[in-house]
Structure formats: structure tokens, C-alpha cells
Length: 324
Image 1: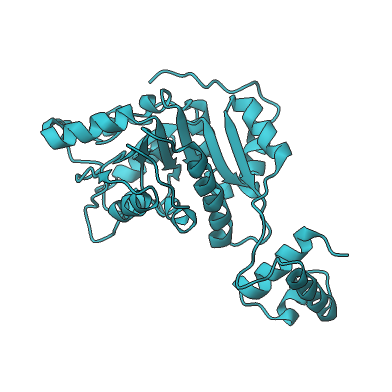
Image 2: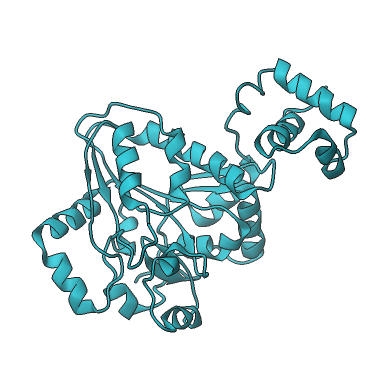
């Protein structure tokens, strides 16, 4: 009999990545005849239907290691059956959607950031009627070029799932000066939205890394060599467009002062502060966020979790109460 892990792995390669049985036999230690039998068994057991169907499972040992080291309320580590970024993110996003269904209750306020990672949560949101629920954007989402941040679309999908309205923050997330930031945030409607984001008891956000693939860089928020200067200041990641170092402290005070949105320190006050990330390249970014105490619930994948454990093993327990 074949294990559930074997059947899921082969089914994903065959149906979701469109590999032939010959291709799979060259990648995995199975003959084509064995692959055919695995697919047949997976179908009979209900794993293969119209799509690859499998339960949301997690890796307890990795979860416990990270949870204990950083004193988190919840850690979910999605198994990696196939090393494909989209497939991995889809599994992580599905787990996040189920968690939101559990914790979103009457009179709650959900704060939502934006980015490509959070988009993988949307297909898995389960409709739930929640009385007097509010949804608010955590940081400005207007890009400075034609590149879309997708902020409005995210809020719209979340509001549809929970049958409620949403509050947009229709400003750029980073502006040219602290003075401009102060003027924009003095507007009554912007001020009200920012206040609502501070009052939210649930916050969900992706942890970004400092690379040229970052949505903030692509969105045109950095001019000249400003991004290279940020890198030189040892920034490892961002949450809600605010950059931090590996120890969790702010990477650039001046940049932070001209960023519009929820302050990082406010995340420590949330009942639920939910971070989503995927990929080994984000290990130091996630470690920085955890060291800063900005996360209470972490949703990541197996490869990223393993890298975090490896980078933090052998050292003393990370501090999670640093002051900005």
C-alpha cells in the first residue's frame, strides 16, 4: 500500500504540474507502471477528484520548535510535497483562510495588508456571516507607477467572504517626506482609517524580504539608490511597508517617518497578529519579525521552517520584546 504522502506527491506532479508519467519516473524513484498504480490508488481513495484533494496537515515538530523558541500562540507549517512556489503558497493560504474562519467573530475588526502572498488566501476564504464586523486596510496601497499592489481587490474579496464593508487607505504607502506624510494623515478620513487599523483586534500581513522582487521596489517607492541604502542599513524585511533588521528594530527611522500605515509596535497589542510567508529566502525576514515581537500566529512552509530552525539553532532564545 502506498502512503498518503506518496499519492499526493505523484498526483500533484501529474495533474497540477502536467508532467507525464515518464517525466515523473525520471524525477522520482518509481517506474511508470508504479506511478500508474499510485494514481489509480489515489483516485480510489478520493485524493484525486476534479482537483487534487487532500487534508490540510502540518508538521508538528517544526511547529513546536519555532513556537517555543519565539513564544508564539500558533505556528502552522505546511508540508512541501512538490517544490513549486505557487503550489506551496496555495497550501499555506488555505490554512490561513481556515484560521480566519475560526477566529473572526461578531464585533471583530480585521486589519489587512496587501501583497502577492496574501492573494493566495483569497481562493480559500469560506463565506461566514459575522455581525458588526469591520475590515480595514493597514497600510497605503497606491503604487507610484503602473504596477498594481492589489490592495483594493484584496479588501473586496475579504469583505465578500464576511458579508461586510471595508475601509480603504487611498494613499501611497511611502511618500517623499515626513511633512507630506503628516499632511496626508491629518485628513479626517485618512485619520479615521488609521485609527480603525490601530483598534483592530486581528491583523493579517505578509512578511516581505529586501530584494529587487519586492512589491514595494517594483511599485516605484524608492528613487535613485535609496533601496541600496536601505540594504546597507541591514534591513532584512518589511511588514506593512515598514522595514526592520534581523534583531527586530527599525532599519531606517527617516523612512519609517514617511511611511503611512500601522506602526510595527501596534502589532504587539493585537489579539491576533497573523504573519504569512513562504520560501527559504524569507528566513531572515521572518526571524526579524519574530525577534521584534510583531507576530503571534505564523503560517509558513516546511522549507522556510527548516531554514529558520537551522539559522536559530544553538543560540539563546531570541528576544521578542525589543522597543522601537
